[in-house]
Image 1 (cartoon, rainbow, N blue to C red):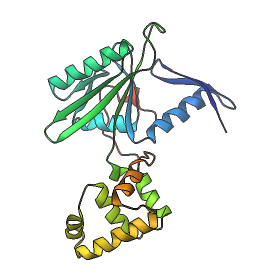
Image 2: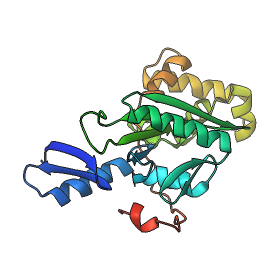
Image 3: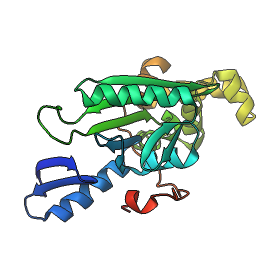
Image 4: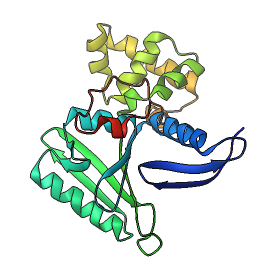
Length: 231
């Protein structure tokens, strides 16, 4: 199995050396790995240009709900968001970590700006922008967990409802069944998963690995889609 010995971001992507393979093979492997993680990931250079974006990040940029890309730069959908993003980038380029919270009505998006190199260590410092995790309900690992515990389709549906924050009455109305039926399924959920309470079950579900359910079809980012594409 290949082992990565050195990994370095720069010049538009990841480069590294692996045993039993070539740098290009390492690049392809690392980029594919980033696409399978249920977090949007961007890598930016010292000029604020996007050097790499994984699949979910490109999906977020294409949706233009909270973030947009202009000329390889990262902007917010609102002027105040752009200011917050620039502040986070500036601090990260100075070697500091910064959490930025973007809010617009019912929409919200948190971004962590993380320096990948100290400004004194490199002439071209890079910054990792890590977006918040997708909804727990969209995590493929939740359904994988249900299968591993032998949950029935109805029990799995109840668990997904609980992940969405629904209570027993809401789940019952959504599925057109009696509340007593949902309570019986909740009891079965606890027994099959070995969790003494729904709170414990939700803690266990939220700790599952973040797995993308499927690569989405993304509307191309017209100005520089070729720069970002690596599928």
